[in-house]
Length: 564
Ligand SMILES: C[S@@+](CC[C@H](N)C(=O)[O-])C[C@H]1O[C@@H](n2cnc3c(N)ncnc32)[C@H](O)[C@@H]1O
Image 1 (cartoon, protein in one colour):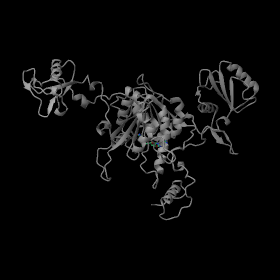
Image 2 (cartoon, protein in one colour):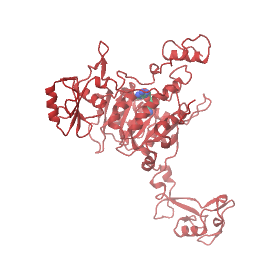
Image 3 (cartoon, protein in one colour):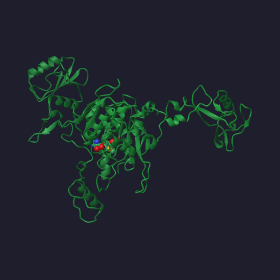
């Protein structure tokens, strides 16, 4: 048997990859929204809400946003087994892993070098997701697993009351992330621990014990200490002094040791707010409900924003997202959530003055996210982190949907350019296909986009004559080059040294899958059963192979699978 060359997770269908069509995004101006007036000069208007499958949406934005996103937060379906009532042999887990892998591979390319990915997940897939992300990001770029206390009440109906979810954190480049990540602001509770009973000019401080465990001490830490008031003190039994005699005397001279208000107490070491935690707190890996909220508080806050109506079942609390964005981003940075749900990430990003992109597949993109974000922009959303961020409203977003596939079949089954494409959409789509930046010139008709300062693209469905091409070649000149994508051309393909001539749709036919709109978790998307598997299956409680075949039939929708 061939030796495996690396440690890896395998699953059914791992080798199958989609060849995605890079779609054009179309704005629906009726759903886009902008504040009527500017609230501050830092208002952000260029946020994007995209309606559609996130795999196609991520592919659509990849060219423009590769290497530009500072923080990605995603909260994908947890794959709790609810998608199919019967499954076997890990089909559902395999499918989930493939769907996730395809999305994370694009997400990884979108991140800035100092960017990070944060993924909410529970025990159903946490272990598998961790290994999958190790594979996509490199194990060295794993940062932490955060435990979020999602409920504070006991759930008595299950064997354990599952009170936490995980947030897996990966960096694009761990060392850059570590260098740039922010500390957390001090909570009032932590700040209240620091006082200044001796009016120390260095500011508030708290004290810690001056003793250490005896077992960890060296001989120089065992001595009788003479206090400034002349008392003689030995360390309590089982302990030694934290400092050697000489260091202790230096620290006393510097005013860093506290002997109580009247100077006759046991020594304690002063820790100043400004030296340590004052600059901020290192994030911890356990996030308590009281600090970031629970699923319950999230639901209540969302209901409050919709006049008491329960519009979405599984929102995350705004406090959770705020904590992530505090650590991973700064104002103005780009934040992405490609499983937007009720739009919590965008709402929080807006309130924290970060730019955002969100993608959502289902109708609640329009019915929940749009009205939620409108209220945030209007300053009419008092719940969540509004007070903590001092949010007063402002800014806006544009609403996009995915253009249909560029190519359609005609009545003979041949690929043709879709009738739904106008000239501008066609030019933009061809730019994406050919890896040019779409930037149509107002003055030069043949400049629809560019790949460098000297290399341009021209897209037309016309048939171009030799004379027309000669004129084009003369205008382009010897210092520049032009890719011409046209219906047909009446000369040899290499007739003009500065023009590259291609026909559409022929030039793009093999580049991707056409006409596929749904790459989501869908029974119809399951991998086909391998041809070498037994085709005939006896009925009854047969073998494992029989069960698998029956369940696959059910999964493919041929007939309902039998209960095991
Ligand atoms: C658990 S919810 C996210 C909740 C969100 N964090 C919030 O606070 O409201 C997952 C969301 O992902 C969406 N989703 C699932 N598959 C998707 C896909 N292929 N493309 C885009 N969105 C998808 C679902 O419709 C659902 O709204």
